[in-house]
Every structure is written in structure tokens, then in C-alpha cells.
Image 1 (cartoon, rainbow, N blue to C red):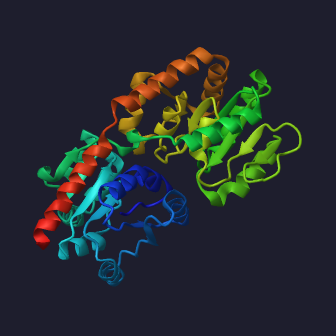
Image 2 (cartoon, rainbow, N blue to C red):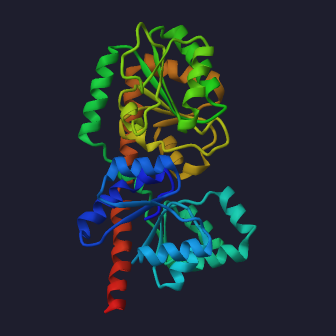
Image 3 (cartoon, rainbow, N blue to C red):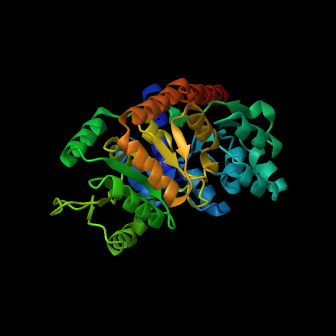
Length: 375
């Protein structure tokens, strides 16, 4: 199972747990390409899976990896299409299934510029489990055989929040008292200044408000901490063991693996990667907590999910720091509106569950075919 980084690893968790329950006799090798993804694998699964970094997509490296691991089935989370890896899967008779697949119009245009290579890559896939019909049609337009396309929905709708995480969120929120809390999650360079400027406006209406600011990448933690101080806010770091002295206006979420818990301790969520052209991040995590959600206009990585949440009234797109500040302040002042939008988000999740079961059915079919072939 290849899960590129943190997001794909977290999304793969229910799949891994289900596979271990269904097929305890089959060892699972889980690959990532980033240190943060590796850390998430260890935190989520411990020794239950064997983790290793994915090999560079070079013929020799992939051939050695395949010879050593000898996979029975290759599962790829979302859209990580490496030509040499898929070539070696096909050459060795290893079915490759693209799970939870999404393909934006922008990415499809990029693949179309390399049409012959893209067709060859797609021909090496045993199947594509697409999140939405639009994603699937883009794969078909690029050369995927239609009979290999399966519209299963997004596995991210099958999110389940562990009771231990809920307890930690409640304890953290209790430690903050009754002050209003909003979170700006998975921010990228270029967004933090807008978030901090929005928080300054929010404080004018809610003087005791707390902002939980969680940059997307760990290498940005120190720089964002300096940025918070330079903007004149009293700040603390989540990674600090001792509680800060005095009131804190901004808490920097610089601890790995706690984003889901931090959502649960908040009243309003802004999902980053959306005020800059990065395509946004997973809006279903705050939705699973029943939070009202705000995001910027760049959401091409989650178009189908974004449309569902907006149509239900669970999420609103804002423009810049002024729009962000206005919506955060309004939501913090209106508990009934927060509850209404939160219920709408939970309803969207409940209405779209089932992708996990559909993708497991595809995996079982491929495994059964492999058993027949080997016998």
C-alpha cells in the first residue's frame, strides 16, 4: 500500500485496519515518500505493518524493491502514478489498484501533455476507484478502459474519531475555559499573514478569542512562530511542555499528529491551502466534529467534497483576511448558526459513507483472482 504523505496515510487508516481484520494472514507493506508520512505510519500502526520509503521510480530501484517485497497486490492511495513502478507490477502480474482516486481538471491537462506515457501508465492499472464521476471521466478521457473504472466515493467520508482523541480534545478545551476558539489548519506560506491579520480583527469583537494556527509543514513551524511574535501577539507553542505564563492570543500547533484533536477543541475551522493556489486540504475532519467550516477559493484538490459541503450549507468560501475575519467573528458570536452548519456537515458525511466497503470489495476480488491464478 503506497500512501504518499501525511494526508494519504491518515486516509488509509480505516482501510489498513479493515484489511488486517479480513486478511490477518497477509502482511502489509506500507510505503511513503516523506518523513512526516513515515512518522504517521509509526504513530497509527506501530509494528502492525512494515513501513519503508518507496523506491525512486527508476528501473533498477523498483526491480530490487519488487524482488525483495514480492507483493501480491499493489494499492495506491489517491493519485501517485509512477510509470516504472506500474510497469514492473504489470510485468510481474501484480494487480495495481488506484484507490480513493481524484484527478482535477488541472492535473488532467498536465497528464494530457504526455498522452502516450499516460495511456501506458493507465493501461498498467488493474482498476481505478474514483472519488467522483467527474474524476473517473477524466481518467477515461486520458485512456483508462471504462470497464476498469469504479466510482466508489471518497474513503475520507468513512472517518471515525477515536474516543481517546475525543477525550483529549475535551480536556484541552476545558483547560482553555469558556473563551471562543478558532483554528486555521494546514496553512501554507502566504496564508499566515492573512490569518493573523484576520485574528486582529476578530479580537476587536471578541477580545478573549484564541487562534490555533497549524502550519501544514513542520519545517515552517519556527518561522511562523517568529511571524506571530513579530505581529505583536502573545503566543505559545503546543510542543512546549510547560503551560505559558499569562494570556495567550495565538497557539502554534507545532505538534505532529494532533490536528484532528485540535479541531475537536475549536469552535470554528478555517482550512488552509485555499487562500493560495494549493487546492485546499481535507474539509471532512472539521465536519466530523460538527464545526462550521471556512475555506478560501482554491479547492481544486477537493472539488466534489467542497461542492457537497457548500450545497448543504456546512461550509462557506471566503475571500482574503477581511472575509475570513468577518465570518469568524460572526460565527463565534452565534452558537445557533455554528450548530446549524455543524449539523449540516455531519449529515453530508453520513450520507456519503460506504466508500471503504466498496473499495474493500474490489480488493477482495483482485485477491481472489490472484489465489485462483496461483492455484
